[in-house]
Image 1 (cartoon, rainbow, N blue to C red):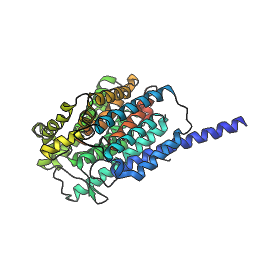
Image 2 (image 1 turned 45 degrees about the vertical axis):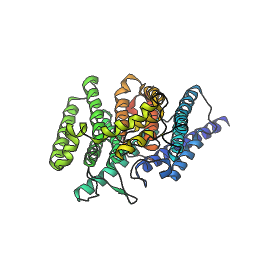
Image 3 (image 1 turned 90 degrees about the vertical axis):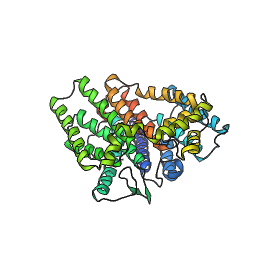
Image 4 (image 1 turned 180 degrees about the vertical axis):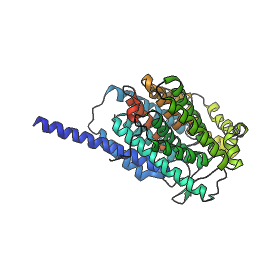
Length: 403
């Protein structure tokens, strides 16, 4: 009788984990496939978010509360208070739908910290995410090859549900897929050329969007991977040569295929230093100077930048700084430090994934939606596993995505 109960209990655990995997699949899809041109707030994906939220709640139902979860609960409560208090007392902004969206995302993140996924399930989630990036990259390449003009001067985009996606948000979604696939090709035990091919396609898809934020994310994540190649000594000379040949081939193809305006946008240093974003960010920081400790409330930075430039901040981390002040930045510093605290052998992988997820968010909004919090969830799950296990168990292996 006890053996039967153990088997049934194991089957229930598998079912619960699969429901969490399903919720991650769903959030990965609606993060980019939604009716918004820009970030994915809860309001734009309310039905999908509610379903994913329900899946996670079902998983943790009746689960015991432990010390680690209490620490995460304290962090979540602190984040909510640091967002709500300055907003409801602000003279700059008033409480809005974005506040509710942020609270729900923080709660979902906290609930996900109560879920300890196996390497098999984390690998499935990251593989599914990467396959979405492949499909979107092929879509971008199709639009580019066929000369489909979507009216966006900075680069190629796609139209989803009648809305043309902003290339910066589109490319921000793609960068982690490239990093994961390319790292998997270089360091996975199964050296599959198809993984390299997919990563090249995603790489080209990112370039054709013309997004500077995504380009910087690529440069940073590739730099981290190169550092591992140089300092780890765990990769063959043939792979090193192939790596640099691939990078040179991509850059050569880029120079040939891209028009001069887009090439200048991506590679000309002056196009970065003279960018309008510096003006926007300077105006937005007035909200921080007004209340540096607690912040001026959610979206107060955008309120200041709009008054002078008509543009929102285009920077998730300036949104945090202006909205929640030094307290908010300190809370995220603690959170990021915890995520980066993994086994020494896993630090390059963790750092590369964080760079690819969060560097593009320096050029987009979305702090109050899953545009920001889905990367937080993914990085937490990767980090939790990598604290005591090898990241090589998480690398892309095959197309098995069974739920």
